[in-house]
Length: 201
Image (cartoon, rainbow, N blue to C red; front, side, top):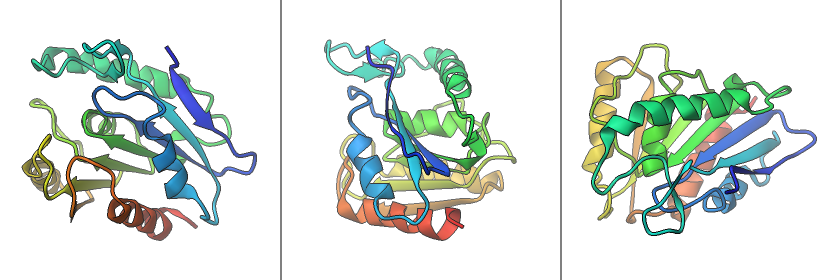
């Protein structure tokens, strides 16, 4: 299994880490990472991680089993991901200069890991909160994005996440776009705009 794919820039001062959805792999979000960072004045390293478990279909990966849901596997999956992130060679660019993007199941994992690692910012796309998920005060800014017509993970899931974040005083935003369980041009433009406005010097 390819554990990760990366696109490195000699002059990078920031990093993008990508966590794919259920049944995809590390190659899935790389084009999205390229689109997000193209033409920005600050250069980014892009790292896309593959989930550790094989998807039940035999192709693709999963962070933990989803059908049926095996929520009891989530804590170990989060600990494993935290170790992997801490073990990556982040010599020049620390985690606090890293933006984390997760899609669907990867977004749920991003929300979990954001309670343990202080990233620069976290984007959870078309995602959901795990049943036992509890935000902490010292979390990075969280940006939630969801398609209005998502038939896989209903938009209510991101609304629920947003309500929990607000209740816990976490800096967060919620963006709904026209689309389903997908990454659209509108979503790319929103995320690029946020990166430029909030995170670039």
